[in-house]
Image 1 (spheres, protein in one colour):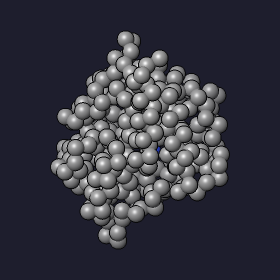
Image 2 (spheres, rainbow, N blue to C red):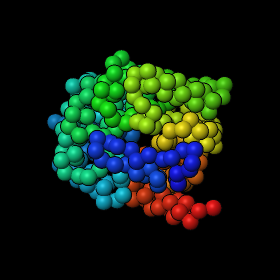
Image 3 (cartoon, rainbow, N blue to C red):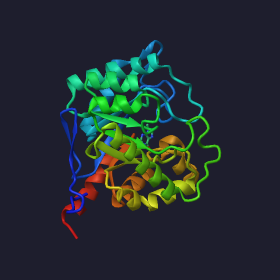
Image 4 (cartoon, helix red, strand yellow):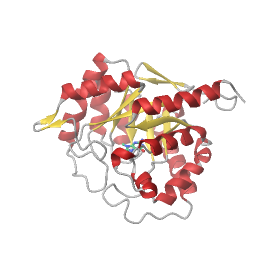
Length: 291
Ligand code: 9MG
């Protein structure tokens, strides 16, 4: 997305690593959980995460065009086993440290836990991705203390029950109000606007209709003035429309990524790095020739 006079786009400082938001960027998903919905925990062996395999995956993601790697140690899919703080730290922190030492990429930690935010930041994380928008006790202060950019995501309910019967009067207005309110809370906690990214949380307490309305109305969220991050890759909204298995959702995921960028998204969170990077390069090429 080109910068405009009313919204000069930043280069986000992610712990000293620059994230150029003058063009759409790919955030690759690297789950360290044994029960992730997209890869079923393929990086896991009996006694925990296989660090070498995780590093090989991270390296490949960089080669394929990811400028951010999002590392998560808690599965938020409905029905996932709860994770203890010790497990989450064990899954996330050593991998963040290795990637920070070996790869030139922005490292995002997908966590709601203050301890994980603090410890991951200490070993090189550059971005906090919180699906609970810093609502867990202590998260706001911990995130502020790291000095890192934060992605605030909207979720209705809690992961284990959120998809049972999500209800909204006007989903886009309610998501927008929630994110605006969280931005104000961040202001008061000393997290400046230039460090905030927003995410409507596709699939987090939303029906297919809600997800489609949010995608249609993405420009309303862009008008909140912060860069938008979105994640729709392989999600069940695709299955609901097309009845496709998880590994058959690529084409639809790419279409959704391009539609999101066209409506104002800056960062696409995805499992399909190279294909998404190619699709976004087409968006950038078109944007660069101007109107
Ligand atoms: C962790 N996680 C899973 N889906 C996500 C999404 O759509 N956005 C963000 N920010 N994080 C997500």
